[in-house]
Image (cartoon, rainbow over all chains, first blue to last red; front, top):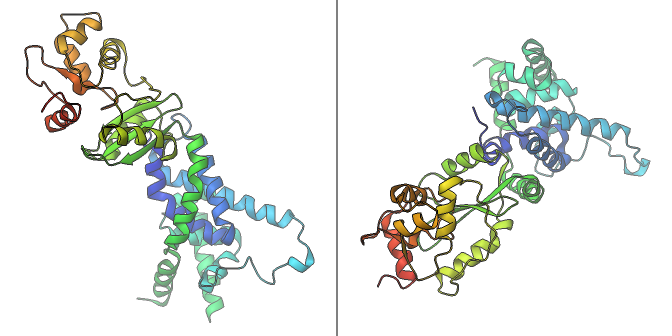
Length: 152
Length: 204
């Protein structure tokens, strides 16, 4: 079974992947998205990629790029004057829910975004995060519980 | 609906929403880098004979297809036969588009673009290469191109080869007619063949 043209994959899943990256890395989503799609295109050949779940494959690359960005940020020295007083500044119109999701522990943040923002199944989320389906359910549930705690 | 269901429904509603302007900008920023990395790039364009799909590889123009079917079919065919690393990017095809515009405006009689013949082989390629030598405003026959391709008797095979021409208009299969007279066939439909021959002054 051959792979579909990459552009069609991008057209179908690009918005969902971008939305996920906005949730994970905020204003760095544009950079992260470019890295994700470029890395995906580079490895997009028969034998290296299975055609049976290309969405999960694409999101896996995105999730790893998002983690790389977070790790990079904590290692990069930031001058004291430039330190933001909260998480990365959100665009003016962005509701604070996105901000709170972004500040969850990374595993919960990713699971919540994948489940409720991009409608992936728990089995897919388990693949994307490399944690298995049960852990994916737990992370999503814990994420939701934490978000609800903050509202009350 | 329980409290939790209501909460998660609300979550899905908020988190499932894209800022489409922001996405469009993010997307357009990736095009150049993706195009550099792709094996096949394509553009959709309009013409006096209808919508066209143009595709190129690093070697050159590899496909000009009438957008009769879903472009998706043309792209899937390219993905299967050449490479799945197919990206939409008009940049590398602007020159071809310009030359096609000039051709349709009566300002150009000869295309000057590198061609990638990868989608053809054997006798078909020989037939199409012979066809590519037929000048603007002239015509040939199935028998003649079969002869040029090395097999004068293979007129039906020549017809099939022309029918499978992947680079329409630029490789002028429209200039090949039935040996005994009569227009013959055309992949893009006979009305298009007639339009092109009229444009070139072959038909009135």
